Length: 414
Ligand SMILES: Cc1cc2nc3c(=O)[nH]c(=O)nc-3n(C[C@H](O)[C@H](O)[C@H](O)COP(=O)(O)OP(=O)(O)OC[C@H]3O[C@@H](n4cnc5c(N)ncnc54)[C@H](O)[C@@H]3O)c2cc1C
Image 1 (tube, rainbow, N blue to C red):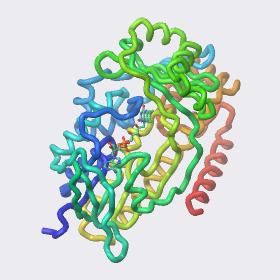
Image 2 (image 1 turned 30 degrees about the vertical axis):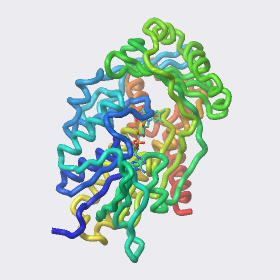
Image 3 (image 1 turned 60 degrees about the vertical axis):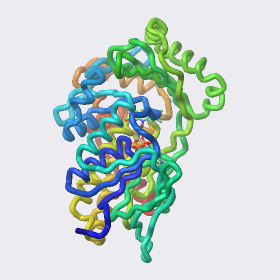
Image 4 (image 1 turned 180 degrees about the vertical axis):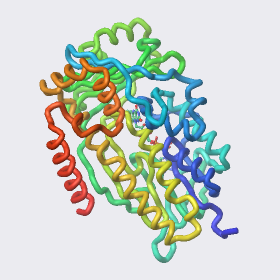
């Protein structure tokens, strides 16, 4: 038996942290997970889990519990100008529907599953320092819980503590790529209002309606970042007017059912990649990589990273050089898996609707297979090169992709 009490300490217990802790415990590791919050509790999110994310929940044996709480979203409508597409994306690993559970439901369910797998969980427990050995390797954490301080040691410390990650700061994780915030977003819950996932796009506006637990619908309105100062002075009025002007039918249904919770919103969504790992530490979820929420990929990416990290490090924690090798390969895999989605998201978050895009989508609307491709691309599925843009030829698309990759590689090296 090793003298180090834990193989891994995971800081943060929502979709990235609980999923990582669950997978490491299932692989036979001794795991401590802490969160300064207690559960069940909500966090800011518009809730939509893409099929790719749902496929992870199914693989982990958790989909039935999510499906018991909220409707399957197997139909999407998307309206841009006078053009309306209706359909769904292609199934991912046999999963045809997205889901949008309340975060109080999803995160609590993930915590429960992690604890059932053997994870020791301490809620209301805050990370405020790291322990290091003489080689500067991270060897544990300093914690504070209800006024009591303690230290815990582990072979690996995982930061799943969100966009403002304390662990990233304490570990000195460098920011590799950063782009300016692009949008601000406000959302509220409405009784009824929608029976499927609805999206509306217009110049400078992006409206979504997401059916969730208990017959409620979350309705979100995105604005460009440069409007944030104005919007926040009367966010309620700006939100309702954006929905009315962009999606009048949805607006009428919202008012019919009535609003059930206060408006929430943020204009502080950063776009970045941080270093994913270093000696004795790793970052998963928003702690290591954050992007605007407009493309609804954060939860799916958190699951993906949890699975990647667990796959890489399982069985290596007793041997520091092997663990470090595994962490380096996690870092490479994370970058390759998420960089294209990052650029897609920044592009959507510009909230720009050029005329040629509307014409391209009108073409797509005529063809069921292309509509399915379109919704699949929206969900983050890899796209055929020719579908990259209505205006690009296949050869242009390949050249463009190569140039993008070269630029990103240069950015990371620099
Ligand atoms: C407005 C908005 C809408 C969104 N909509 C969607 C969507 O529709 N679909 C989607 O997939 N994604 C969406 N996202 C993104 C998604 O919510 C995040 O990507 C996801 O929550 C990241 O999970 P995480 O576990 O990495 O971090 P978080 O959910 O941020 O969890 C971090 C946890 O760490 C804990 N913590 C922080 N610091 C400490 C500390 N020092 N000590 C102990 N614990 C600590 C916190 O209490 C928290 O519980 C949205 C985000 C926003 C802001």
